[in-house]
Image (cartoon, rainbow, N blue to C red; front, top):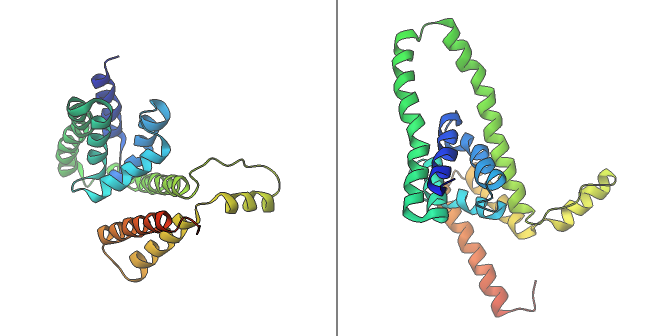
Length: 204
């Protein structure tokens, strides 16, 4: 199948099913671009989330443009982005008309109420998946007793990433810092660490 058509079909599915916004689309994007097609590795997918957060615009559309460009250049970016946007344009226009006409119906309210927990679950799933990829870059074997599993997880975890994660959480939750500032600061910390490692290779 033509790569442009593959990108279009993949992202039109994401655009049609990503109820709850960009964050809820993350599991769908991961399933398509990492699991199903193998266009990105799990680590590259984490980088994709970071880049999509740092650039203006909805995260799902930014992700589509990034993946399309990475896989097939400008044409791929157009195919993926149009595929991601098209279902939303059609569905929002239809739903806006239906909601304005039938918003007082009990059935509509029940459907919206039922969708909320599913959206929260999808956002949580995306967050946990990204966190695991960031803190455990290498796959670990889950076997043995609980203490053995915890010991293996602690030994294989990226301690530096964990400390950056904790620092970012404190800045975001306790001090209400701007997410962009926190992301930039995290990047500066990592660059400073890498430069220090090159200057002083004896420390680790």
